[in-house]
Length: 600
Image 1 (cartoon, rainbow, N blue to C red):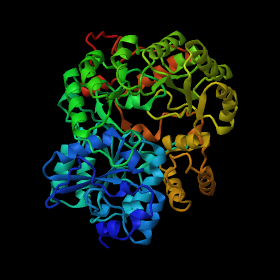
Image 2 (cartoon, one colour):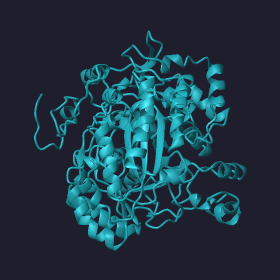
Image 3 (cartoon, rainbow, N blue to C red):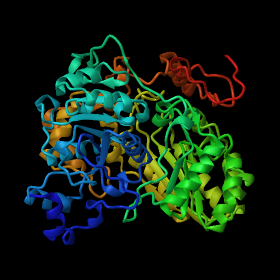
């Protein structure tokens, strides 16, 4: 059946929620003629509203479609009502631009932003009539590549993916196009991908079981992550696709810098995206004005992992302020650091419509903030909230984490006391406290630390419940965190678990609290006899599933950071202090943007 005809003539759009998810046709959409084009499907394995809010996804779409001989299209996972409709009508998963079955793509690139999307990937491949296991695919199947931060431990889903890529997506586009343009077989193309820097192709590696019970790939040389050198010479989409329905982040977005050198020891993104690379103020101003003009949004987001660390932010805000005020456009600075927000910066955006501010102290006590290398004091936290209030904000969110290494009951109580001080001393009326649960992530100093079991977490939550008397409190589900931790540090043995939970238990959209069902995972964990303690308790071995991926951090640096955490010592950001010799700049030839470099 013709997919377009089915969509608009069968009545299906009247039977499903939010039909605009499935029809495309948005403002700024670019559609090319498909003849003689390399067809690339970019898949965000979640709902339309989530995928369309991801800046990296739009960057990749834009970068591929700039190439004359390439047509890149979007693929999202439908909601459950639409999945049932598609199954009943024998309609495969299709691209949003041309309603083409995804099986007809030359390549499908899957974004791995979070581990709980792994069951979604299984459903998407099945709905697209693509063999789920890579070993079962044939010449007529698209090549399946996955990339993004979760690709830094590819092993849990290595059986389902042809190749993994780690690094900046823009750095590899020309290589991929050259390979896909070649008149060679699918297998030969995968071999060429294997020979290309940044790619891990699981089929070319034997597996071995370590003494500690982990199954790891046997390798002679690690796969190095790839980085682009200069953001200013990297194209950024200003004609951003404007969705017809509200998405999670409904605003114009400009990426002002990439990377973060703060060195929070729990933060995977901070280590994965090193080093910091900035766009110039002039470039950011021009991109901002052009994006607002081409999209019509009334909010602008200056995006990075730590926007307030951008070195010329005051100049950018000064230049943008008249235009934003005149057109009543608000501006948001996501991922705001609590130690850099001052009256001067606050005043630059005080004339625009106020949105809520988010601060992340992460820990309530100074001792634990030093352990995780947060590098902020309680006085600084209170001062910055007061500055925010003076600049006109009346609503703030505070992000904390529990279950961190060395955490005590007193550290948890300190979260309550710090929130209470902000409420009483600064007199902020609308406070929301979001509490997540620490998950040990690969390639961080805490990668070998234990994950606290739900029973232990519930005891900590009892202490935090006092916050509900004077502020809103939201706490992440400890059972969701447990599965995320299992997938985060998993090896190849976990792939069968993911497959069975997805298809036999019909687990889907596990990243959504209301859809997650721990019983589905528990049943299959027991059925397969998986020893979860191996993945969740403190790890003693250096032979780890993810070590085949080299994100360019020196082992000595990681080990030293863990030792400093144990001793309660902090490490300063190398942009403002001495080089920490983490290894990234040396291995890539990139220099950090600090004006004065001091060798240790």
